[in-house]
Image (cartoon, rainbow, N blue to C red; front, side, top):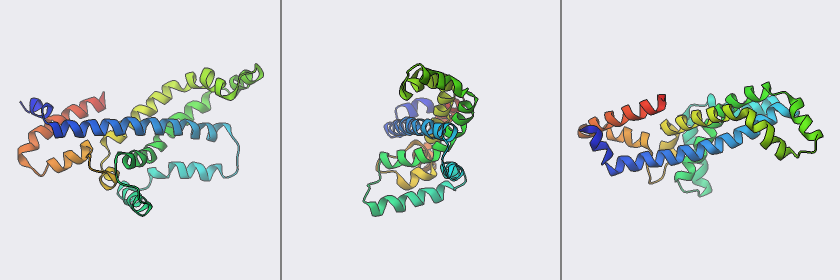
Length: 199
């Protein structure tokens, strides 16, 4: 009965849809930036590489509540309205370290001579990446996307500060706990999301 109730609950379905959209967009953004950052960290030599690496991984050690408040204080004076875009930006920043930590080890295992051979045979950097590097790191890219998606979909603290009028699923879930008549629906949908996340 309660599983049926949450399926016909328009607000709950809208919150799930909002979270899914944010998770897909932020995961794609984090994976693209993670690939670029990983290539820079493993294939390039430049001054301050350790500092750049520490900066990229710093969201792992910053409490999400502090980070969410910092984003709010950044967006408000800049005149940026809170919306799905602000949540996506926040989620890209907090999921980027996970994508880097997944992709860098895989990229480090790939022999650089494969890419050099492609260059010698006349391939451009883009062609080399598309034909050689990307297929070899694809399992890591998929893993990074799934980790980023799960992290973004379930994230509450940052979203609660920068979300606009469309609430995400964790925010809806937290607000629904205040109403005892909605608790069975919340438990039902939590079971579904937990099973999907574990899957």
